[in-house]
Length: 172
Image (cartoon, rainbow, N blue to C red):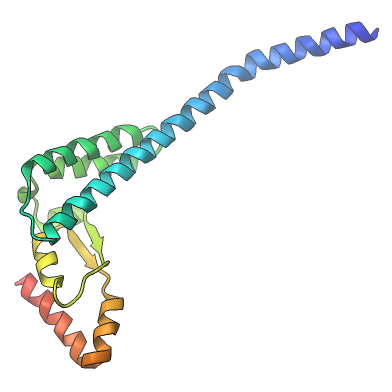
């Protein structure tokens, strides 16, 4: 086999591989773009939900227009995620349905659907009861830092009872 024939054969093999792998490489690139867009959508929905609750925590009243936007954000996140994680897409879809009429959902409904929230940052004795009362989706609070800080002033046993009192008032 001459060197020219060898190079032609290698060229034909490379062209065949390129024809075969080209669509795969393109599909991989497309899939990567779809993943990035899905992550952007869920990140945006999470950020907007956080900002909405932050506004409520600072005294703003629930806003039906903002809740309508949250419906759209969570729905968009569900659509993007359906290609990669059907379970997470379903949770986002349920979250979208929740925002259509949040007052129709009990604490138990929220827990069963898996769309509850865990909260923690900036919660303390002053705002815990209000926050948990105003946001029924709260399933769990992480108050360790605040509890220990307050314990330095009031003593651990006293602080535990104070926090329990705030949460007990909420549940009754």
